[in-house]
Amino acid sequence: MHLRRFAAGALGLGLTACLGPNPLLDAGGDGSESGAETTTGDGDSGDGDSDSRDGDGDGDTGSGDGDGDSGDGDSGDGDGCSNAVHDGDETDLDCGGSCPACEPGEACLEPGDCDSLVCDEQVCATPSCSDDVRNGDELDVDCGGSCRFCEHSVYVDEFDDFEGSDSLWPGLAMFSDGVFAVSYVALATEEIRVRWFDDLATPFGAGEEVTDLLTEPTIASQAMIETDDLDDHTVYMVLNGEDEMSVNRDVFAAARAPGKAAELAPIYQGPNPVAHADMILDGAIATYVWEDDGRIYLRRYDFDLLGGSWITLAQTANPNYANRPGRNPTLARGPEVTVVAWAACDGVMTDACDIELRRFDDGWVEDAPVSLNLQPHPYGDPQLAIADDGRVALTWTRLDNGNREVWAAIVDAELAPDGAAWLLQGGLETPLSPTSDVVALEDGTFAFGWPDALANRVHIRRFIGADTPLVTDVGDEAPWPTTDLPYWVRMATSGNLVAVVWSGKSDNVFQIQGQVLSF
Image 1 (cartoon, rainbow, N blue to C red):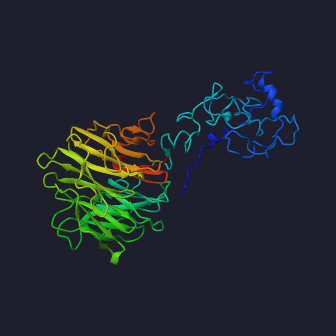
Image 2 (tube, helix red, strand yellow; image 1 turned 30 degrees about the horizontal axis):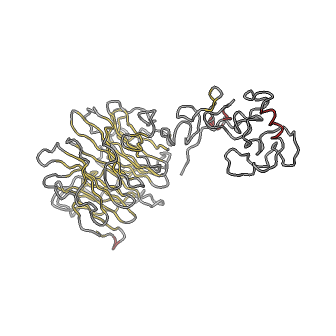
């Protein structure tokens, strides 16, 4: 995987020693007295012991040689930088000058005297996300770590290759080597296409039609799934359509690699049309969820068993589906269990909904679904992500035409609330639903992304807990430019990379846009 190239300007500051008399020392005081003491190095404290301010070893040019001679004129040996005396060319006690860099709050003469590389009015400054220096835990200058995202790739205003024709509803999957695949619907040809890119957003080739084996295919899933295949970079998608066995619109899983024909596996084939499904993949085991007339089903499939076979019967996630029918099911795999989420609405007042969850591990863990207990509104399009510690982050949309909102919540590994649900953004009175997404990052944070068609922005922000952002000095970590009418955000992550895509207008045509970020 490519690593971000660090800005040379930040590194060019260096750790430059201050030569000549030190104006921060009083003439004739302790500094002049101890200067003779520290020119006689005995080699004991510069040999790599655990003191963070020790010298860096007896072999350094100009350091004490340990032979008892005095007057070699250099205070940067091991003893001089760990003698608890402010002497030599040190700018503060045992730091600065030719000694190790000083910590924030200690005295300095130039940036190299400070471990933050920032010397402000002769005092070392605390690293910040706006000091134009790469310091602290930053990956690059003022970005990464506890600062806002870095730009790993350039911004791309057309991931699809259907110039002049609308492309909508992107899917996204990212492999462990940073390669990612983007799917989209090309409206002019009514095709579902997929295209592969490296981590710097360079395409492997042209977009390819996912399959020609289905009649009138549409995207049934809100996700595309990567595999552990780093040779072909095979992805799975969930599609609606009809094959020769269909009597209605059915649901299929399609496996696709660059330059290879799709392999189809039916998820649901029956008398009722099914419009929404989702899947996760754990090795060769796929877990599917779908909604059939308000009933949320879960079932598992083994692609390696007898050429592909179901290994469980369909399990009902919401037993009270007759009174509270479900919609828009989605799921994610955690360290121990699978978590399923959906919007559950009152059977009479369909605008009175909540978000429900349930865990599955060879059977349902809870006796009944767990509700977030939200104020009743028309909710939909939930997405979820699971951190390594089992915490679950969710995002969903309030679908009122007069007040579209994007919400978020975090629950613990037992599905108990970890703080109250919070509003990411409200007042999104646009004709397009502000469909959001969330990913769990390897640093333990959750990144939420959502479209803002009023401001022509796609927002992204990381949270460490309920309504607790990681980066507090900005309201939005997005580095990309504005875009016209952004819609349908999708995110994927691998290592310290996050890929973000959406549909947005360019030259009055919807294109798939986005960028790869790092942290």
